[in-house]
Length: 68
Image 1: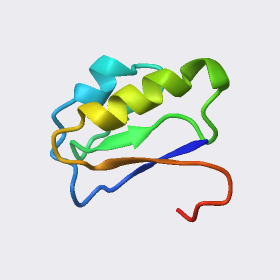
Image 2: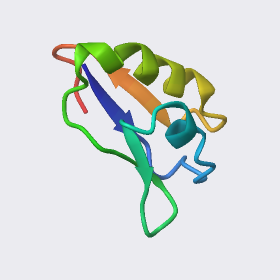
Image 3: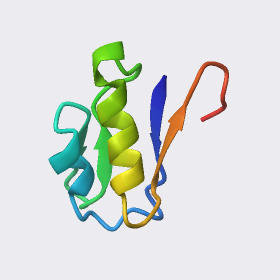
């Protein structure tokens, strides 16, 4: 599984970082960035929680062969 960040939608609220600090950071431009390519199985629940918590719907989980 991978996480995609739609930077044009991201408002830099940092909720994803608060929910999943091992998976996200806020970059110098104030937008979320994924800290990992493939999400390790032990972090999958955190990834889903972050996606559901994003007020701008800027995050998406991609499983398997989904395109970025």
